Structures are given as structure tokens and as C-alpha cells.
Image 1: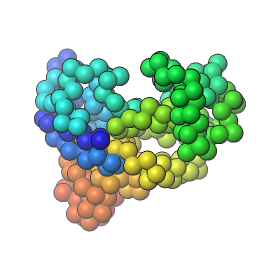
Image 2 (image 1 turned 180 degrees about the vertical axis):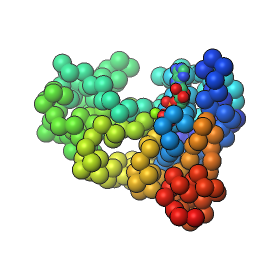
Image 3 (image 1 turned 135 degrees about the horizontal axis):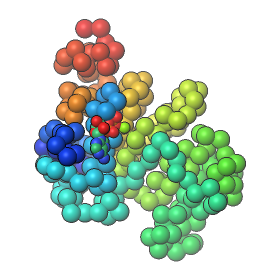
Image 4 (image 1 turned 60 degrees about the vertical axis):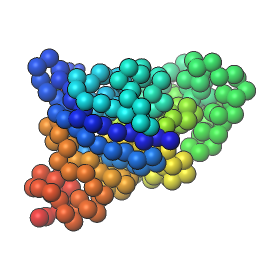
Length: 238
Ligand code: ADP
Ligand code: MG
């Protein structure tokens, strides 16, 4: 299961409100995309869900359980960042299996899981290479592999493709869509790229200055934007 609920979530840094009362329901298996201009609070909201920041108001529930006091490692979520943060001195196999090793998963089981994830990501031939010997797209796949092996309740992606060139971005976008179809794991995906949002999302959440402007399917937002901000952002001439 991987149901995530936000109820009146708030976050202030010092006296500055960054997330201002967000209510949201993410169903199990749903692919939800957060879009909005730079600085609107997308990453902060994702970090609150991950537990990397504490909320200053409201509640976050995962599968019905309030996780306010649950540390990030115990929330059952896997985060994928735009910077791959791979260990350069370790093989692809060790990079993907690192979290499992830290969690004390025995070597044989670890290898089995790493190899299964590598197969899904077309990385089988690269397991003994180091990150420096891989292309940008392959490195990003390793980062995703690291998230997959932990069999999370949900993936949290923060602009995972923004460091890649345009052609590679299209490829990886298709790859992520394919992955979502085969795994069916809940995902929250942050991007400022409308095309990524429109093609990947079951549900798009449009954020502006720490608040939700509208939530809907790509088609709903395109056909019935709630206001000019959404219309401008989704690119529909209303
Ligand atoms: P986005 O990901 O949508 O570009 P962020 O969530 O990174 O936006 O940032 C939202 C706002 O919160 C920005 O104004 C940013 O400067 C501020 N902010 C983010 N993290 C911190 C922090 N740790 N301390 C103070 N301000 C922060
Ligand atoms: Mg961000």
C-alpha cells in the first residue's frame, strides 16, 4: 500500500510561510506530479513528505498513520534527486545495493534484488562498472535502481531529469512511465516541465506560492483550468 494524505500542511522557515495549508490525497498506485514556478515550494513539500523537514502545522498520513514522529528511514518512501549522488568508488551493483546493505539485508538476497532492479532498468550489463564509466542517463537509472530495490510504498522524485540533455530527458521520461506501468508503485514527481507533467501524471497538482491552485487529471487542467495562473502554466489559451 502507498496512500499519502496531507491535511492542512504548513511549513514556515523563520517567519516566512513557504507551505500554506496544503490538503491532498494521493491514492495507492497513483502517479502525482507537482508543478509550479521556481520557489513555489515543490521541493519543500516533497521533503516534508519524506520527513527531511518537519511540518510546522497540519498532518501527513501514510496508509492512514500520522508520520509526524516517524524518521525518514522508517516512512517506507524512496527519494530520487536530480543530482545522482552515486558513490564514485563503488560499482553499480554496490551503489544500487547500498541501502539494503545498510539495512542488514544478507548478501544473497541483496544480489537477487539488485539484479532484478538492474534488469528492469536495462543495467544488467553495467553492474560491475563504476559511475564514472556510465552515461548521464545510465547514472540516473542507477539512482532510480537504488530507490527501486528498497521496494518502497512510494517514490518521491525531485526533478530527476533536469540535469540531462533534451534527447535523454525524453528517453528517461518514457523509461519512468514504463517503470510505473510495470511496478505500479505510488509516485510523487516534482517538475517545472509541463510536458513531463502532462505525459506522466495521473493527477497534476499545480502549486503557486505555497498553495494548491488546482488538482486534476492532465485533461481536466487543460480543458478546465480553474484560473489564469493554471491556464498559463498548463499552456491552455483560456
Ligand atoms: P521549488 O522546489 O518549488 O523551486 P522550494 O521548495 O525549494 O521551491 O522553496 C520554496 C521557498 O522556500 C523558496 O522561497 C526557498 O527560498 C525557501 N526555502 C526552502 N528551503 C529553505 C530553508 N531550508 N530555509 C529557508 N528558506 C527555504
Ligand atoms: Mg525544487
